[in-house]
Length: 529
Ligand SMILES: NC(=O)C1=CN([C@@H]2O[C@H](COP(=O)(O)OP(=O)(O)OC[C@H]3O[C@@H](n4cnc5c(N)ncnc54)[C@H](O)[C@@H]3O)[C@@H](O)[C@H]2O)C=CC1
Ligand SMILES: O=C(O)CCC(=O)C(=O)O
Image (cartoon, rainbow, N blue to C red; front, side, top):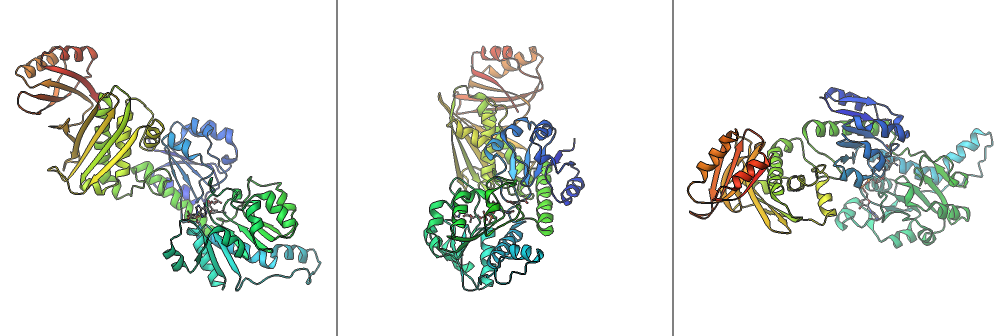
């Protein structure tokens, strides 16, 4: 069945066409983002949800999203999606980190110029027939200092345009390297310094616990008198009450706001405050940007739903379209090794160690580790998947250790070795992917074997003494269970031995008990893949 995607915000129709062209069923309901109850009612029917900023993806909506695999944000900020809740449900959340950056930077520059020359107020006054030539005395931006808070994609485009306007640009961003600052032509400064020196301050950080109210009453008090503030990032970055007070007492000469603490903003106090310019979250609203982000999000979501390729996920490492087919058998190998060990484990798991040797060490090991952890946890937690597994493990205090060795110690091009450390004991198994693309288990408890993973398998630990194979075969025959393949391995002659048999029928607990009654057998377990 073709995957189904719901578009619940006003995305460019270009997205609809992409989904259709890729063979994905798509419902375009741009008003639905505003109707939380209806969205919660129908979200269970979809594999993908494409949104902009109006749709709030809350835990309640996610609770009903039984089939949802991916949420695609046609834009940058994903603060309207509950990421931890989506991750816990194994849903990929992806955005389009560059598609609207230029447009948003241009909006910030437009807002700055509008503030400098009071264009909206002058426009309204002129239309009102007042011709107030003496009322509107602007300021030049040339040679003024622009303080950029958050110098990432958008902040650095704003800086570049401002330098073109002959402004001096200073930037506060803890993650801006001195080399990058030099390349951008900006001076990297501390926040205090920026607040004291800037004539204009523009915000370009995401809204996080660290950036919320970065422009607080205290921060505003430290600014130069007559400063002008531009916010085209997120409303919560500014304490709106403090800003209003500072505008009313003249400490701040003007503020241009595209974003508000509560959106849609229909009755914000700042609307009645002098020297404020407002736009309704229009930063990304140009036909170019909307076309870019719609096309990109639809391509990314389609790639994921159809081939498992992941780009720009905020809660999972990327897997490129070229990498996805190469990675796929190793994902299966890692998941099956984890699953094999998880199925044998009875005590609580304390840790999982995954070792990568040879060529596989160069692949996307984060994705492979997630697969191994998924396999190990799935026998205990049915709903876990590659997206949620690392979080689920962390929440349960299970430590995940990943080791890579580019030069292998085995005779294989690539080798993955998984150890599941439980409260009672550790179990380990390793394997590779052969030329035929099939994952193989090649080592269990440091004993060599060679078996494919098949739906019904019997794993036996026995003593390497004569008579076991004959009795085992007879017992399965008597129970109408047919062998498909049979792999044996032993530590040394007469020592510990293992057997991994693939059978065509399901294995009952009763049959396992009978196998365990064979004198050479120490343990028999059914494992399924
Ligand atoms: N108004 C609108 O329509 C739009 C608004 N946005 C907003 O703009 C924000 C920035 O977008 P991009 O530049 O693409 O993101 P980005 O991730 O490229 O840049 C953000 C920068 O903020 C910096 N940062 C993080 N924490 C910081 C802190 N505590 N103090 C100072 N800097 C900090 C980061 O190091 C990074 O360099 C987005 O998060 C989004 O909320 C984005 C697009 C459109
Ligand atoms: O989709 C929009 O109009 C808002 C864009 C935005 O805020 C973002 O990309 O972070």
